Length: 259
Image (cartoon, rainbow, N blue to C red; front, side, top):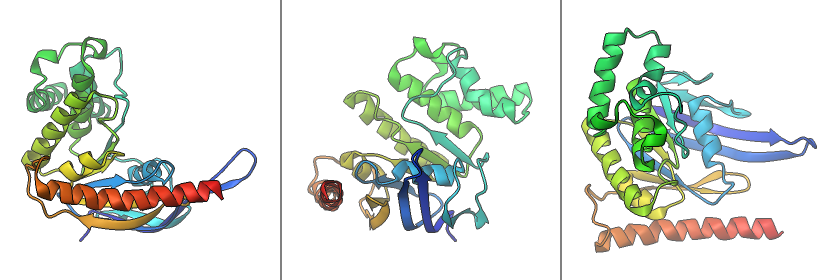
C-alpha cells in the first residue's frame, strides 16, 4: 500500500485577468513508506504546487491526493514541511522553535522538553538550544527547521529545496545528516530540488517533471546503495541519466515559451 497516492491530479490557477494557467495536468505518483523521493524539473513545472497539494495547503482542481488511503483535505500533523527559507520564529530560541508544534498540540512541558532534547541531540544542536536564529549559521538554522519538522513525528516529511540557501560545503554536510536521519529514524521524505547531483546522492527514486503544464515525465529508481561516492563511475552513470531527462524537459519548456 502506498503512503502517498497522487491520482490523476490537475491544478489550475486563475490570474487577476481571469487567465487560466495549468500548474499540473494529470499527475500520477505513488510514494512508499520509508523511501526518499526527489522531484526535479524545470522552473514552472509545478514541483512546489505538487508538494503543497500533499501538504494540504491547496486542493487539486481535479483528481485526488491520499495519505494512508485517506483523502487529504487540509494540513495535518501527519505531514511536516521544511522550506528553502528557514521560516524560524526570530523571537524564539532554537528549542522553542523545535517545540512550537508540540506546544500548539497541547503536549505537556516536560514531554516537550524531552522530545526537543532528543531532536537537538540528533541534529547536534545541544549547545545551540537557547540561542536565537540570528545567532546561528545558515546550516544550523536549517537543522533547527528540520528538527521542528520532525518533532511532531510526521508520516511524511516534505522538503522544498531546503538546502538551496546555504553554501556548497554546508549543503553537502546537510545532505549527509539528512541521510543519517532517514536511515536511523525510518523517515519517509519527499524532497524538491533543482540540483541533479543532490537528487542522485540522496534518493531512492527521482521524479522528473516536464513543464507547461506540469506532468510526470518519468520516474527513475536508483539502485545504488548508500553511502554514495560522487566520484564513482556508477554515480556518473546515474547523474548522466537524470541530466539527460532533465535536459529534454528544459528544451521542451523553452520551445513552449518561444512558441
